[in-house]
Image: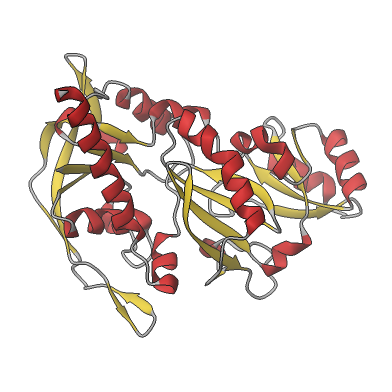
Length: 328
């Protein structure tokens, strides 16, 4: 089988951390061809999506004394060539947020991949529908108290009611721009102005004290949880995101968290969101990550699992079932 990955420049990826590399390695280990491209290299011709792509050979990371170690030269690229995306068995859209105009246009191009020939993960329609903050609002019964607005007075009233709150830009990633705020903060107005830029809505959530114990990332495959890692804040930082120094800690999925997955899973399946990472703090859903959710390397390191191979095997099963249906 042939697998294509739409990623950020491969030179910028961290093979010991990035889930995209874990998925590519898994496909290679299972005997498949791996190709890479980038969102600006996509296009449409004769009504079909194509990409300027390169084959890639990877040197898989090794687990040494509890950490992933990679070779200095961990990938080798083939010559760039124009390839119809429908020649691929599966295409993984793994470009990091934020969802810019360029990202949005890439999803429009992916609409021109024939779904009868190629599985696109995640669905272009699903990616457009699922802002990683707003999408979670479908599940207010399992979320902390949340509002979305740019109105300074509405935000102040909310923070006064809650005592303490968290400001989140709707297009943020990896914890960037998330602020902790109280109603008596002397910088209250300035923080709101910075967050909203005076014209865009933001998400405001009640602060969950359990955040001190960690922000759990749960990986879902086709709506079912397959692994989790807890990200514990370090030092005086209140955010648990690994990008801002959060420590990855082994964890288990609780009964409450399984209930959240059961609540969210069918909606993800409906929207074609196959590979997803949800964030849970203290038994409450805070975000649904669909663009390029990470965490696989950390879970595999802590659990001895092989989540990447599990994902690739799932794709293989889907293709086999589709082929059987086509010939029956």
